[in-house]
Length: 217
Image 1 (cartoon, rainbow, N blue to C red):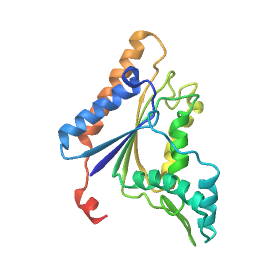
Image 2 (cartoon, helix red, strand yellow):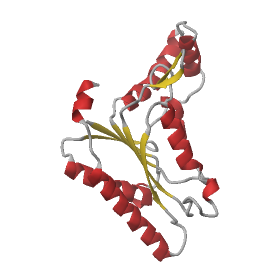
Image 3 (tube, helix red, strand yellow):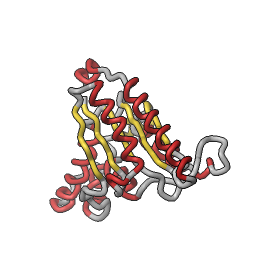
């Protein structure tokens, strides 16, 4: 079994989001010492641009044609990220809320991996997701409290987007841990952070993986 640990915070050791995800990872390592964990730091990784050659190649494939050699080369770089994503069984996304949504590097990564024929396909019955039987845990930190019923809950485009885009490709088992509010009084911030850390440890402790399903796939 493999976890793809997607890091979408540039603050590294100063990141409150990553402090929470570290609690999750440490707990999961204790429970499943044989688990393979691959870190993907989006702010330390050179992500390809989704423009020009890759776009030309994508539409050439979609129309049943073959792209030119230069377009194919750039497409191979795009598809490598997409197939690499599909190889994991569990995903952990650590992403602070930026402007009510996700950091731009995470959006770029999502635009890279969301490729027809790899993560989803078009059929006579509509779109079919190809990333089924997988789990995802999204860990976030927010300056304000965007919980349901709060005065600013309607501005939470982070959770709804992540649920929608990954649900589109077949990942429906998605759990969220939100540390909020993080920009209020220090004692409120600390309490919210500790609560999120506790939730991360509990979620990791209760996480069950199906190794037989992994072998079948």
